[in-house]
Image (cartoon, rainbow, N blue to C red; front, side, top):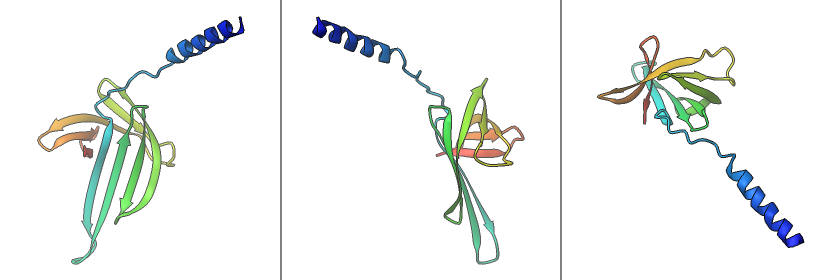
Length: 124
């Protein structure tokens, strides 16, 4: 009787664990996006700033900001999509406003364009 009870308990655990799967997220924004800006600090020197967003399928991501190859900001972000508009929030950075963008396909590739018309990032 104990073996039969153990068998049914194992079957019950397997069935219960299969019911709690996370739905698959195939949003096209998932992946790595970046923006690189090069500024001249003098006639011989340049300053490089690279921003990178890594979107994952759990509506989260990681943001990196590199100045001259050295990381100066590293934080997680949350994202959500509604009717083709993506809102990116940065809970780890004080005073940083949310980015509100749309994804556009162009000759240069896929672009995240901000509501003010500026390019936030390009897909890598």
